[in-house]
Image (cartoon, rainbow, N blue to C red; front, side, top):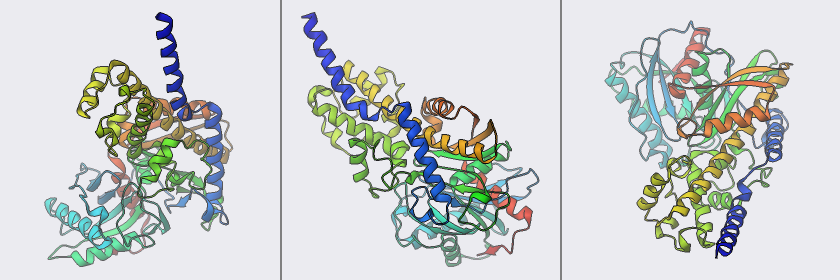
Length: 457
């Protein structure tokens, strides 16, 4: 009998490993991803190859970081995948937050931008700022082709946004047009000075406190990175002096098929059910918007193989997005907590089911952290080689709920990065005020330099 039980458990273990094996990446796998990211970075920077690169390496026209002499009050508008905020940032003020975006991100573009302006006006009214003409920095967390610091053409929506009529248009101009439609009474308006990606805002916000911060990283609803590149390497912009911050838009890494070897059946199913199938494939392996759904797909297969729930899934397990990432990837949940979660989802989970559920979550979240580290390793190694250094010391400004709240994502990322880029001493700095403060800092730096006439409402 003991032998029979042992054989049954061994067979079950082999079946579990067979399901999870495609998600378990070796060091060689990660080194290959790092090399592929580096290749796509070079393609994105090249004038002739940029259009066909999956990593677009978009110039941001941010050439300077804060030096501590910035003064005054600045508005910051922060539009991302999870948050929508209006802040007033002053060196003697604390940031303030506005209401959430609601469902406007699925509307036609006039409604979306009208809603944004309504929130700005409401915020300024409450803050007694309606009679001041404040410079504004706009954090816009979506891929844009910037042709200037205050002009950016939307390339595509990501993170579940689908407002129609925006792609190909200048986002700043859409904001200004809405402001003109909404201008009322003695409300003076705002000066739109700069549009930045959330990675750039995060880098700038952390750079105000740490001058060595030259990388911005977002790992939340979506994922992206930016860094300071040598101008001589940026083939898509004129000039070869100094440095420019490059918005990598690395979420689309692999859209050209170069990551097909690590894309599993589970990833394919999740990708096909999104509003942008075949797009943002790297992001769909890493970010919080998708990890819970990957977990659900694995649990479905394990249930079909009678490895979970005695082969009898609850109807709720068939429901898309039932596993939120904050639940689905919390690998350090104790078994009693997992049992509580399973009961809430009407899943009849045994002790063994809870143990296996934890293993699935651990596998998915570890892979996400390792892939993020492989991408970051390509960035820091390129910076080190650019500067001809044997050893690079650099700080990464980081924001995003997955990085901040997951119990071991940050540790797994940092451990893997140290292994893949041993000649780089990388410090991670959490962005306390989010990317909104960074947008205000970009505006402040621009005004410090003497910005060319500020366009107003």
